[in-house]
Image 1 (cartoon, rainbow, N blue to C red):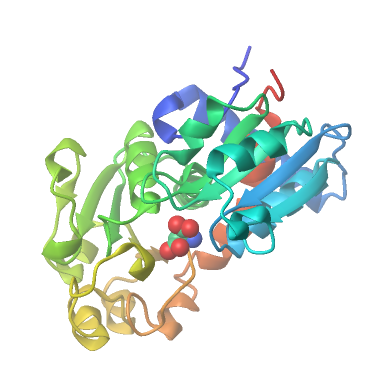
Image 2: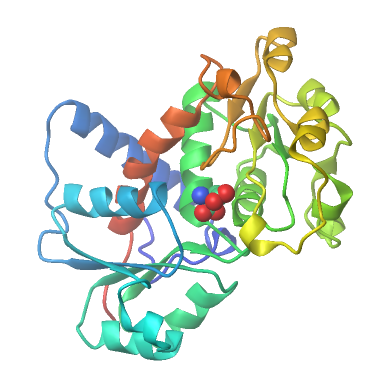
Length: 304
Ligand code: ASP
């Protein structure tokens, strides 16, 4: 009997069998979708998509995922709501919860805000990104995309390059990739490497060239300007030279795959022709995002 979960706020709360169950459901939803089979399992449910921070992929894909399961979706963003008038996170959550939604999918710039929300609402909380803490659905869709290529991640070497310190994508990915048996390597400017990296159980590389030599797939991260003080990196050109993924990298290692959670800064962390080449998994990541989010919505218990 698979576990149902009250909330999903962190990969750290999932077991390997929870993750595998989510992959299994996501593959089933993908297969059914391609065969034209419709899902109705959330027909009587209401999902609130509460995005206090900007989003294109995650917001739309959670919305599409909920609709594909038959749920009703209400989308909330801080601009245009009473958050813009100064209403607190606590009051906003309590107000939304007083309308009895079944699930609140939440993105907020405060690290730990999703966990905080679980204390004050009866709805299930799905963390769609909390500051620089975690982004569980991104890690799950990334892992599903990798599993489509490799079948197992046991012993695979996966590299993450860029702004590690401000990245919730890196934190969730490291936890999940290690849970699935992969070896994780990280690389980035010293100013963007967390000071507690020794507790992450990852290996490090100094340049992207070294990382590519070591790894089967390399994931590039966006520089999180909105979460950083000025002066942590030099020019875009200098960054690209040491940490950007360029055409010559995929030419010299034809087995290499590249990933990026988006949005992409072309010519900084990854070049346009690399991101749009046959070695790029970026579009597959986006497509898998919908099926993973359908699976995540399906394993939730809903209102307590
Ligand atoms: N979309 C991802 C996130 O929300 C990555 C990024 O914004 O750089 O964390």
